Length: 462
Image (tube, rainbow, N blue to C red; front, top):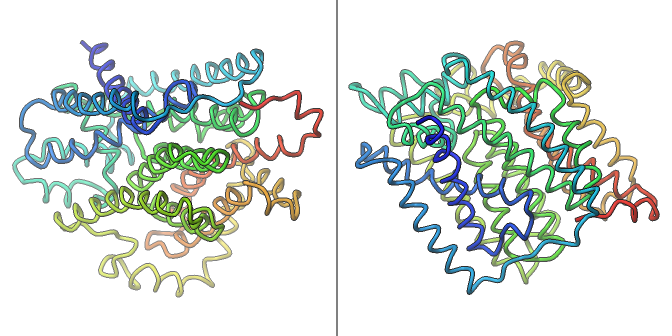
């Protein structure tokens, strides 16, 4: 029975995502490695809204049947697309040894992650953020209890205003199981670690070299911070995966101008926005960089970029509407919660006192080789070493995203209404992780660009 539940848990989102991507002109031929990752992200994202409606209507019918209904609609749209939407084929292939090495790297890291997944499966979700924030919200959504959903969210869920994607993915696991399960909800989130592996491997192979896939994955995952993401059901992994997919899709669109990549970009950004509150900050930073650089303002693609904003605004709007309806507020921005007013008031009042300690802690975290976060300073050092050539390279946008993201997080900690030392100790490493996959991709691209032409010819890109 458990095997069957795991099969539906993974396969239905995958097939829903497959159908969506087919409808947008993408297929396994477009990128076999990345397609599986994109499909899981897309399937979970498309399942979430009907699951939210299903729970708010007090779960009429069977949740698994709801999944099959969404699958049927998506499959029909994907099937229709085969005859009317041109499917993108893959780029020039890498050499066979390079492809084998890339898949071996993915297989090796997958085994390490699978070990973490299985070790975590021995312990129920019962403590920490995965229990008090994400699983608790999923429980209240699925089974609000006699007190009602509003009371459950306000009294039993920590940070109940946080976005809905993670809890709704866990609700999908409960629907498959037929009730709340203290193990299966975590598994639905842990699958994202394998999506991250495939997404990063695909992006590095496409934009740098298949020879660099295994080193990039090893640099990212051979550290406690990244492997820990495979051990719990928090949303940092979802955010980081969505951001990587969005950046990768933008790079692909920059190469060939296909609007199919813009659809993938929207999928990634919506995943970011619906994963954590930090996702809204990173999403605004990324769109600001694209607008400032002119990518989203070209007359021939302006309409396509503007259409991207509709699902993004919808995702944000659903979250705001949910919080307003149930009386939930963000403790960082609401001036009525905590001391010294809201976010902007505390940011100005604490800036001089806290800038030094927060910056010092972030610098120490970034320079910690045991945690693998040296990826970010190495990437930024490479960008500085490129000099003026950086501004003619796609690394310009990636470096600005990493720098602005770090600056945004420093501002968040300066304005925190929590005990500063405790907040830095428990959260600084996790927010830095959001930017690590983008830094790993940027470092691989930078290394490829710095190779002499002859060496570059020996490392063919996909």
